[in-house]
Length: 384
Image (tube, helix red, strand yellow):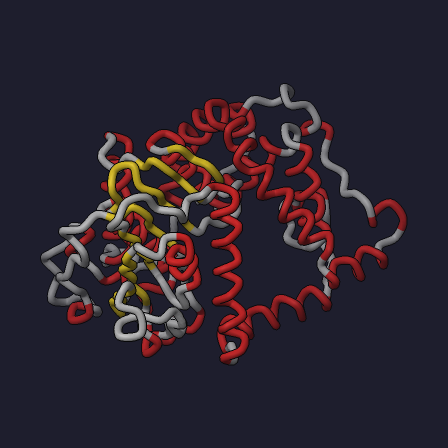
């Protein structure tokens, strides 16, 4: 698919320019993630398979003790964010926090730890639709915390869609509500991701593009509620992914990007922000009301093929070094975690000879100046 090839293009740009990313890419290749598939044939790792199967089981069928552990992990991450940036210490007597995709609520708990005067508004998927259990005290147990249980991807009016077609299979499930439309927030968390436990509750048309719908929904709501000068903390996946890179570029323009997942002094009314919001609304609409011609099965390949050549060739030269600056602290942590994983250590000792220590990267990638992004794109076949 074209998107995979675009991500490989970005990785090809990064490998000769960042030693940390190169080392991580080699470790990922050894771990059969095939980040550099043309240079490594991969291998089966039963220990790794068992590890990730267990991780998925814990995520989908967690016991109460495991859920508490995840909640406390989120709180520890909050402690680390505060120690690194001070972002959870909110000034003023009436600080407001918005937690999008809140459950189990560990990040909001951290915000209240450092800003006990704050009030938290949260929205989270109800357990009846496959959502996580909410563990943070709220309502009567803590009047500072108010929670709305809803599927954020169905807030049609918030995303500019008020006329729902009668024939749409989810016609009765869309909401005309615009939660907290009259409020603005000092701190916003965006922590949602598609859950496997949600899949049985979704109609077929949503299955293919649900991750896109959820990402757009969170970003639109966050940017339409955040106070100018506020702080946004968002869950992002690999820094070197195309969608992540585009987001980082945007927030580098409209905010003070402290870490790859934290933006302070966000300016949601800047032209670049308004353009992005409209693009997210269009993407949400396209994924939610698919053309009857393809019946919802069209993926992003055609769109990418039309636009990616100019976007990538323009963005890598102008933003590539900044991407490395933002990414290297994350890649260093990922490299260390992968190297120290018990299942990886066992496999590494089983690899013969020099393969236990390195994966070769082709000579064409060893020089930072040898290939410009535009020429790399010309040599990259994009599939339809």
